Length: 237
Image (tube, rainbow, N blue to C red; front, side, top):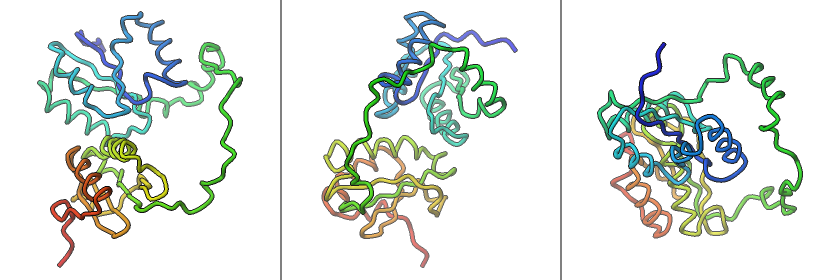
C-alpha cells in the first residue's frame, strides 16, 4: 500500500517534552526524521488545545500519530471525530500505537536487546519516598470518580479527566488534606448519559460533556461547595 503524500505529520501524546520516554522518543525521532521533526511534536499532557490549533493551521493533508499510552479504540474514535469537526475530514488521518505490539510482543521485546540506545541505566534513580502516607485513608474532602468506560471514552472522557486533574491541581486541592481525590473508573452507568462523574460526598451524579463543564464543576462544586443541578443526571422517577 502506497503511503499518501502528507503535507505534515504530527506526533501527539502526553509526556513528549520531558522525562525518560520523551528523551528516548525525541532522540530517535531526530535520528529517523532529522532535527526539524521536533517541531512535529505536540504534547497533550495539559490538554488538546495545542493540537486543535495545529490542525487548524495546517492547510494540506495531515497525519496525526496518537502516542497516548492509555489509548483505546474508543479514544482513537473520539480523536478522529474531534479532528473531523476542525477540518475537512478527508484531509486528516489518524494512526495510533494502540494495539501495535499485540501481534508480536515477544518479537518487539527481543528487538530491544539489540538496541542499546534504548537501554536506560539505573544510576541516580529517584528513591521511593520513605513516608507511607498512602497506607492510610486520606483526609480528603471530596472523592471524585470519573468514568473511562468505552462509551464515556468515546465521548471524550480521557482528556476531560486530564483537564480535571490539572484544574484541581491548579486550585491547590489535588490529593491533599481537605482536598480532592480523583479516580478513573470503568463503567459506572448510565453509559448513555456520560461522560459520568460522581462526587462523594454528597453523592451527586454529573454528566460532564465539555471543558466548560469541568471548569464549572471545579469552581462551583469542589471549591464553592455548590451543587450544579443543570449538570446532574436524570434519575428514574
